Length: 268
Image 1 (cartoon, rainbow, N blue to C red):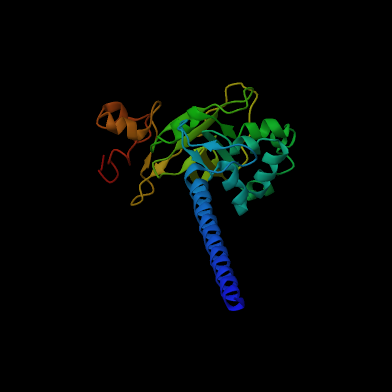
Image 2: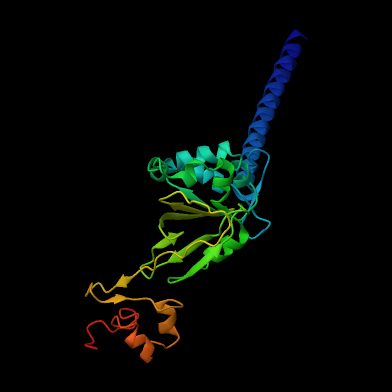
C-alpha cells in the first residue's frame, strides 16, 4: 500500500542519515589521530629544515630541531652575525648534522668596530666567518672545560691561527685573550658561544700568547696570584707545589700563586 511504501522510504532515509553521520565521525577521528601522529613525529623524530635533518651531537641517530641556525636566527642580539652567516652561505650547514662550535659576536661587537680595525674590515667575509666556526674536536674539548684550562681549537678556516680558549679561576672564559664569553647554549647539533668581540684571524703564524690574567684575593686585593712560568696556579696546587721554595720566593716579587695557595695574610 502507499503507507507501507512511505514508511519504507522514511526508514531508508533514516538509515542513510545514520550512515553519513557515522562516516563523518570516522573521518573526524582519523584526522585527529593523524594530527597527533604528525605532532609526535615533529617532536620526537625531528623535522627537516631546508631539506636537511640535523642529528644530535656525537653522530647519534637522534634527530633534532633546536639547531644552531635556529638559535642564532632567534636571538635578538645576534642579528648582524645571523646576516653574515646567510651572506657567506654558512647558515645551511648549521642546520645540518654536527657537532659544531660557533663563536658568535654580539651585535654590540659589530657596532664597536672602528675604522682602524683593518684585520676585520679588509678580510673576506667567508674567511672571517669560517674562523668563528669549529668542528667536533672543539665541541668535545669545550664540553669538558674546567677552571684554569687553556687550550687551542682549530676552526673551519684552515689558513688562520687556532682560536685560544682560556678559563679564569673566577669562571670567566676568554677567547683569544680579550674576547669575553657572554653566554653559552648547548643545542642539538653543537655549542653556541656568544662573545663580546669579533675574533680576528691571523695568517697561520704563531700568535702571541695572551697576557696573563691575575687573580686576587677578595679579602685582600693586594694579595694576588702571580702565575708561575708554566701551568696554572690551580694545577700547581693540585700537584702539591705550593710549599716548594721556588713557589714561595717567586722571582723576587713576593711569591707565585699566593691567593690560590692560601698565603694571603699568612705573614710570609
